[in-house]
Length: 176
Image (tube, rainbow, N blue to C red):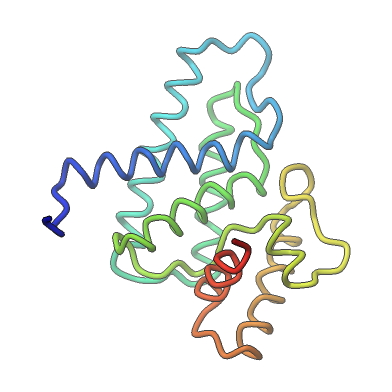
């Protein structure tokens, strides 16, 4: 058995992880497309969003861990890019889930440096014991998101995790 992964295998894995990211991030959003949006337009959106996110990751996450402000800016850029299609309506919560989940997958495979944050959803908010947590699919905006990130930093420090990304990964693995 060989342990080296060739470029074609890496591309296959990235595409599968992207599809999983989109299912987890967008499927809970309800209908993100305006009524009457064609399958061709939806497909074009998914491809162009992948290209946009891939370039962002290559430029800002492959060789270093971004700081909070840069990462927040990237989430907002992703949201704005998606909204620019005119027939797509995603919220900040969906955009953070797309970027953070895809980064988490790529980090676990060693393709990028450790991400600065983690995918914020109901499960991690419950695990962190966030009071009155935000429904990330409907109401989470940057302020609510950062409330979770700041709470996670406190817990990570208290429980001796090297980072909040490492802590969330451990918490997630403990669910199973």
